[in-house]
Length: 137
Image (cartoon, rainbow, N blue to C red; front, side, top):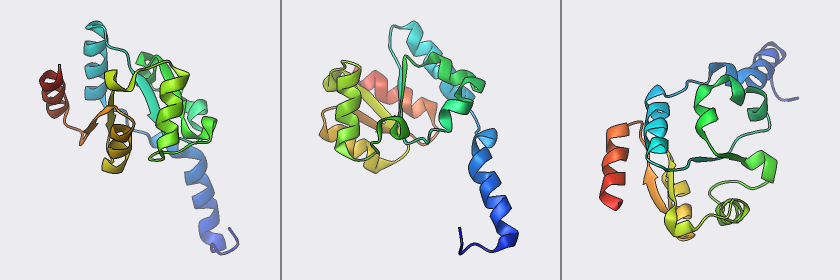
C-alpha cells in the first residue's frame, strides 16, 4: 500500500472491501440450476473466493441452490492447482467421473479434466451449456 498514491488509497480499500456489493447474479444460471435440480442433479460451488464471500453470499439467491460451498480461501487451495479439485472431491465424497465442472477459465477446466471430471468452459450462454449436457448424458 505504500506505493499507492494517497488520493487513490481510500478508493482501493473501498473497492477491496465492497466488491461483492457490485456482484451481478446471472439470473439465467439460477434458473438453469433450479431446472436441473428438479431433474435430480446436485450443484456445488468451487470458487477462488476470499473469506469476504461468507459475508455476502446469503444476499444472493443463487447460492441457496448449492449443496455445498467450497472456497479457496477457506481451504487454502486455489484453482487451477490439482489439489483443490482432489480435496473438493474427497471432502464431499464425489466421484470425478460423475462430475461436470463448469468455469469461465479454460485452465481451470483443463485441471478438472486432469483429475477425471468432465469440463465445460462457460461464456454466459446457457443454451450452449444445456446442449453440452444433453450430449454427454
